[in-house]
Length: 176
Image (cartoon, rainbow, N blue to C red; front, top):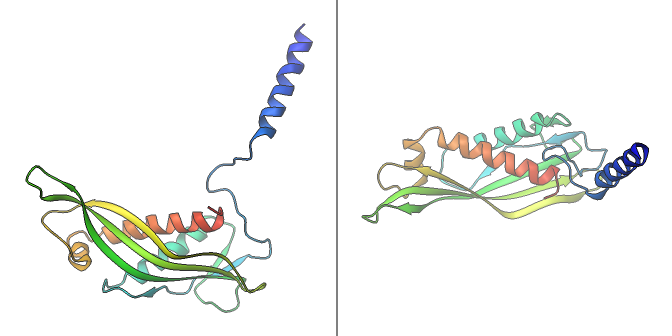
């Protein structure tokens, strides 16, 4: 009887391991194997927020480098693929209010046009013409201008850029 139990247990484990196609987040990649070097030129900034393009671009580069599989360059030439982006808007919207109907929490919404192109095959592997990223923050007082907000919380832009980069790179590399 113990021999039969072991066989059933081994077969059950075998079927369970074959049953699902899930893998750990951050470990997958659907990119063609010939892509080893990715160019990430400076994103374009179509907003009035100073320096947002540099911070976001640097975070995207760091996130790609952190994945460890790809060499990242700042140029769009001499690479296997190019990740280009344009930050089209940044807005601040109240998201929580107190009993006196004053905003106590704001959502910062960054909208960007992103394209990831395979240069060897000259085809777009991933794109989003209006990728939106939303992050909420506590702000003292009323703020409707993103420049004033970043003046109050100097680390907010770095946090926003880091989370945006993580979301973007995961979407591209894991085909979400």
